[in-house]
Every structure is written in structure tokens, then in C-alpha cells.
Image 1: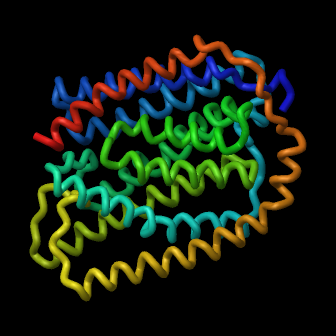
Image 2: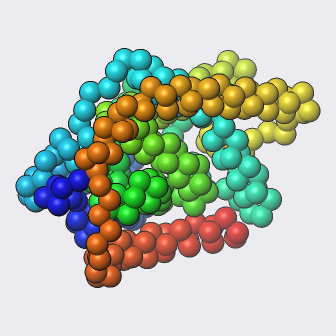
Length: 318
């Protein structure tokens, strides 16, 4: 990495703070003014593009950086696209098990947080859901997290960059009970981008995960309607009691998915070996001194988010 193309830690942290302030402001606004779900969908698209994507790109252009290099705008083979999509699909049950265990713990000590995603009942709502929940975040959040954040912290090495980007990505979702699953997904997304040296790979992986989850939510809603079961709110934490056979069946799905994921992961590593070596030749770690003041925007952002998370913890325990 040449010094001219190195993303500033300060710049990345300022973008993080700007995103946090925007998200918290939206949370407060929707709560105080009781904004309807339909409007919330449109506002989500606006927030993602205007306050995540645009600031990230403008910062890179303002600093006269090579946007193609910074964001890793590179081609990816069809074979790797298919492997990534399958890998993400089989990762969902594994990460879902982690999420399920957390929900069980929360149910044991208190009550789960309300599900912020409304029930999807119609095809038009499904299409809108895929746009809002899958397509928009796949573009905007990847540019910010795996683009700006990851590039900025690469000066400390790949592992640090992947971890920091995943932590900030998870924190910006502002949900204490899904922090670990989103963090794990963030690590996987970052790894996919690193191995392919392409932000497009991260976008495809992100979209696959969110779109599949949205379609499953829609299918569950339809299935429950056919069975004559009415639900007001879909919450993974409010799962019905399962008998031993059902539990073993689901566990079998998780184990099988884990084995298939491991095989796809190994194949993916093999297919991207040359890409990684080529990328590392031009990506030398920069471990120069960084002033503590450069981290202040990130610290302020974490403090702001922590206030919201404290309210969530209070809700769970109350």
C-alpha cells in the first residue's frame, strides 16, 4: 500500500461517528414521531445511500485517493461467485445456532427485544423487503465497512482490519442481542473481500445472506397462515418448545450445514490463493504512529451507541 493511497484512521473514524449519529437520530425520530413502517422502509434506503455510501465515496474522492484501489473494485470469477453464495447459505444455520443460544439465554434472564423488522405478508412487501433489507445494505454498508473501515485499519495487519471492521459493523446495527451473530457474519464478509480482493464479493455475500433470511421470513409467515396460526410479531427469541425429534432434526441440519460450509470454505481458499498473494505484494502493513486523538471520533460514537445498548439491557432485564 502506498502512502498516497492509505486511508486515514481519523477519516474512517469520523465516517463511523457520522453514521452513528445518523442512525441514533433516526431511532429517536421514529420513536418520538411514531413513523409508520412503510415510511421507515423508504427512510432506510435514504439513510443508507446518503449517510453511508455518499460520505464514504466523497471522503475518498476529496482526499484524492484511488477509489478503485481503496474499495477493491475488481472482477470476480463466476466460479467464486457461486461458491460464495453457497458458502453464505450454509453459514446461516451455523450462525443461526449461535443466535438461537443467545435468545435462549435472554429468555432465561429476561425478555427479548421487539423485532424491528415487520412481518412480510405479500409479494410486494417481499420485493420491498429484499430492496431495503438485502440490496441497499449490501451496497452501502459494504462500501463503508469493508471499504473504508477495513482499508484504514489494514495498517495494523489483515486480522486487525477484519476484526475492527466486523466490530464497527456489528455495533452500527444497535442490537445487543444480535451483536455476536452479526459480528461473526461481518468477519466472514471481510474474509471474502480480503481473499478475492473485491468489494463486489462482499456485496454478493451480504445480499445472499439478507435476501435468503427475508425470503425465509416470508415463507414462514405464509406457512403459519396456511396452518391457521396468526402472529403479530416474528421473533426468533419466542420459539415454541420443541420435542426431542424436532431438536435432533434441526441439530442435524446445523451439523450438515457446517460440514458443507467447511468444504466450500476450503475450496474458496484454494481458488483465491493467487489473488491473495498478488494483493499482498502491493499491500504492505503501515505500522507508523497514530495519534490518540484520531480515535476520539470512534470513542465518541461507541459512547453514543452504548447509551442505546444500556436501554436495551434494561428492557431485557426489566
